Length: 428
Image 1 (cartoon, one colour):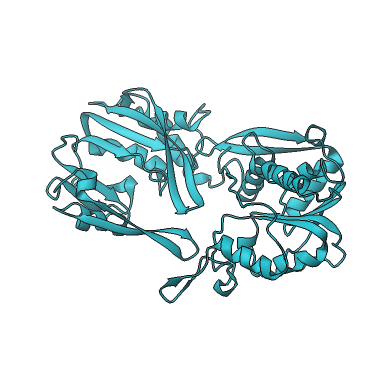
Image 2 (cartoon, helix red, strand yellow; image 1 turned 45 degrees about the horizontal axis):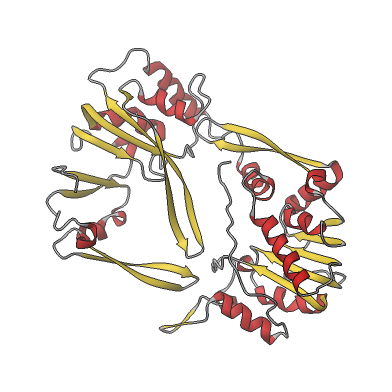
């Protein structure tokens, strides 16, 4: 569309591009696909060559399978004026340092290379590198020099109507040298040798998971747990529900429970994970939590974060391990029971919902929030509250299925449903 005579596209699998090549890049071409809303519910999408404004580009655009981006056949592919490696995840797909070492073989002298990354791929620091951008620059500077200001581009890949993978790709621009710069090779060679010797990043997988949830609950971008607690308190006050005792199930490290304890006389918080329960207890016992968050996996950079119970204004709250589908009998007499981001990860969500009624005081409040991302690995399809199909027909949406079930259990809807944004950052 911009006047390039020939454009080649490469991906590790044929499936990534064959529909585009075979269907939309033809005269009158049309590409059709399905977007999932929730569970098995979907919506049909389509895009025509006219929508793209490309007409017929069958001769100008070709796609090729390239199983390993770090070992592209330079005899078959090369002498390009422009090479772009900027799709999310492309640089880190297999061997990032190998790709960076060899990409000059694809670009003609004076040509332009465009790289995009979130620095989510692991590689040991190249001598003195404090950021992934430095690692990238050191790896490329033997054959390339910066060709413009870098920029960030936001992206989002929808999994369902309520869940997406989103982030910022850091885009950098490089011009190919005619000859390699001296003394850059030893630096990259050392980095590659170190990469073969080290497979662990600065934060191990288990610690990374814990730090992600601590950031989700107490980090600088945390919003969802506290917002859920505020809405519970607001609806309880509007409905005249006493602010006596509250129970949060599936509470993780406990931010929502702590927020609820500022308004309720006492809050019991439980989670199936002993690790999360221990974190909540440590916050109350020690008065603070400290953790390290990975902010740049490429350079292995972390930041230390902390939260103080006094700053949160924690009231009376206890943390214990519990199974949402088999709660201890003594957990009764509550004015509020809540479960946030919970029910679509339970094997039997109805067991939790139906059991809540007997544990609530008359007039008590049940609050549930969920993105409704039903998966059979967690919940058998027969137990989904909605989002399923029967034959060619759609069952109810998860919200309507949830509502119908709770009405059948003797609940009434206390306030209109609403959406709350939540995010879990993989890199802090």
